[in-house]
Length: 112
Length: 110
Image (tube, rainbow over all chains, first blue to last red; front, side, top):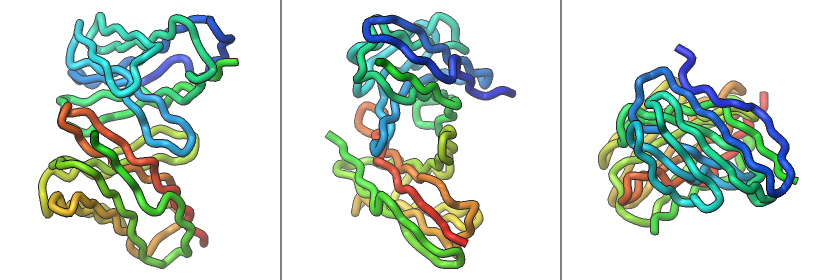
């Protein structure tokens, strides 16, 4: 099992550009999450999904959109990147909402 | 609004010593998680604490939860260099989302 994978691992964007981060899991988990991690802070939840075709907003959803068209994939989109979105993005999945989360390796995004 | 605080945020210690990391949270919750993150790496689940008085141990790490005091502790016994990492606690809020502490960076010197 690959677990949770993320692509790309690194990306540099100019302000105003758009991009999509892909998260895939092969554990048949229902729940998937997107977090951002900034220096000196804990993780903050951006969006999450409780099942295929569903998404919901987390703590810091502004400037991001998500889609979960297939159970194993969870996409995070930035329509118009801003320097404030420079961060490390982690995807995670869990079997249920109260279960431990399994994390992907992260995507380091820099917006100049 | 649930807030989660970890203390200390940075800890440098010698191998062989014992120490405790604290995780305080501001509102009622019955579910708390501990994770480990190595530099530049992803997060790995250590413990899931589901009820008041829960205690879990794995090797040199032991975690406990006191929901009445809104406090969890992560105790390190006879620390070894391999335990150097950043440790995060996360608490479930009323919307079933995890609110994370800022992390405790632990450096264990040989």
